[in-house]
Image (cartoon, rainbow, N blue to C red; front, side):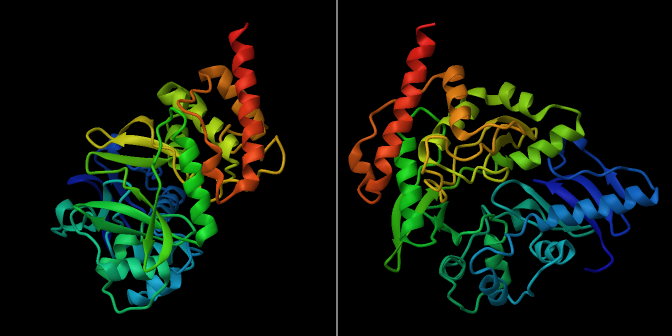
Length: 366
């Protein structure tokens, strides 16, 4: 990384700048990334915090180092393996920290690049990127194209593919993983909840799951982890903010995760939709990511609930509370035929659903 001053951009708006000594200037505080904090002070501790925060933010815009085929992606792009936050930041900065999750990016001061030059909605991928990111096939490919997948998080193999003018996400990991996500998605559709729709597809004969991209130049997503940082920086209680923003889909998330035994609802797997015109949250983003569904399906209690902000609750307890708050909101029956690939899960699903129906009846009788 050269001795540069960087500009943090939101679309074509210059939001802030920072140099490598940590000296910064914030132009539009309300348009700062939710998980990036700068302080305009010149004491040594603040300067160190500023540059550390910047490197961490840039590094977070690169896929996890333990992503399957991560080495193949980096090698094919002609980039070095990365370990530290600074090394990861250096890699992310080579493609302006662009992402399909939001409209933030970075340029060097004096650079003439515009959002139209670097954004991933207009500057799309080649098929070679899909082959490397999803299947680990080593091909010669330019870093500019491969960078289009660098900002997608998660540990399972995945890649973005442009089709009919829009992006869709392909996820692999083996037939068992794919079938888990498909079954969870089919169950989820039997309830009134905002959700990503996962469908079955094939890539070179291998079964994958596909879904449409939920973001655009108009709407971004921010993870719950990023939202918590933003709330903390403004002295707000994250739980209260979430409940005020979209209590219905928050409680429905806890119901669905209990019913399908999802154990992977950490702070990177849920969050908020953001209106790019003002950088403000408008609701929870669509329920997504069920690779790890049915992992905690041996007992009625389920796993510890990850979405209750430090409270000690099982998934069962969180789901019962949610039914009390918003009801069950089932819109169609969950047919046994959906469990053709996983017949062993049907009995537990029926028992969990019956428990929640019983709670709903009990609440109505009060």
